[in-house]
Length: 313
Image (cartoon, rainbow, N blue to C red; front, side, top):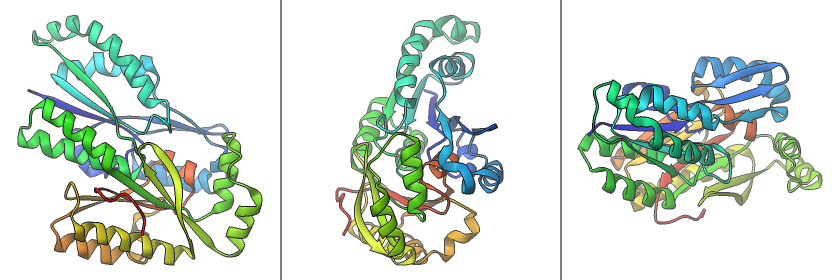
């Protein structure tokens, strides 16, 4: 059976991994004023857009997921021919409309695919499963990588589905932003008044950085640490402890909202890489998606993994 894997562009997979394994990316459109970029996870285009717009006006950005009609067209023009079964892995439905759009599109796809497949010489049925990864950014990577591994190992689709849904329930993403004022302005732009000016001012004055956890679809601060460098070191050390204790998959995902040449110099990261190497865990490094950067700001760093332990300690 030919199995396809589809993600949205908020999923922080390395571009080389996407190309090597034929992963299909559903783009998210980012608009800042008159500037528009459809995010296909092109790192050069993302950096150029970042340098030109995000640092100054990124909090004003509008992000638009692929519409129901465009998802339907993507499948009916390409994927129902190329594959027999597709797993569509989306950002948390609580963070974006993508999951809902993909689910709605799936009804039309499964109703309309037969003429297209028959014209291409395929008379067998086509199947599609939309899975909410219950996470975002670095956390989304975990299920996508495992889907690729299981497909390569010849695992059946029923077993793949059960495993991917189990991983989604146990995947954590942790992120540290650099600029609290950016977060506040972005929240206000989206109508979220929970990020107060006073707390932002105090946090910025004292250089307090929140550690934000994405888990079960929700995002919330789980720690507050003085200094960005100290915060990243503690976050990566927590990830090291999880690796030493044993992860549910041999995968750690790290994304950075800027030039990837800066990532190795972030405190704690080298130790995480060494720990993963010692324990047979593969590290996937990726530039944060443009969608991620406009939502959390330039220079944010995040890590994701699947573990039975979900806290930050």
